[in-house]
Length: 220
Figure 1: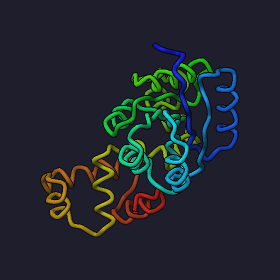
Figure 2 (figure 1 turned 45 degrees about the horizontal axis):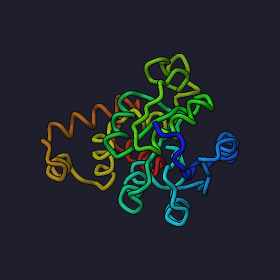
Figure 3 (figure 1 turned 60 degrees about the horizontal axis):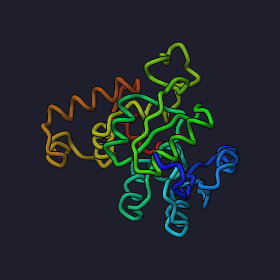
Figure 4 (figure 1 turned 45 degrees about the vertical axis):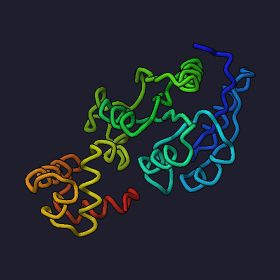
């Protein structure tokens, strides 16, 4: 790994303490420079192209746009930027989905400064980096019934697969299962299975609750 490569970092996170703390972590390293930050997807869309960073340190749970939309925008509009997700949420399915969407690395917010540094340098050198989720809020290490204070709506949303979220968006548009199936090139039966799985995962009883949830989460 070439640690001497100069890496410009941009942080997208709505918590000022995270931005300031990350800046403090980067400060001792002359080859790492914090070139900008944004507290929402909309701010990032304006500031990121101007800052021209090598690495985007991206929080998933920000106001406004959906994190998949944020990733897709970065890949399309600023393709030179390497995305490192920095989040308190973790599951193997989530990381797999993020990598499929074009993310190059994942590091939990519980990571040590040394781990965060290593993650930034790795991604800056175009090397994939997935930090072990030793202290992240992992679906594998804590059941929601044992820690209900951690099981918020955003965490519930992360329990949905990418396909389930696509089905959910089309449900909010009022499409029937048959229409949704034709749109996504899957069978009506598969759509109904996705609907049932979402109701079970979110502990809902009706499609009306699914629609309300989608609106609250900014999916539509």
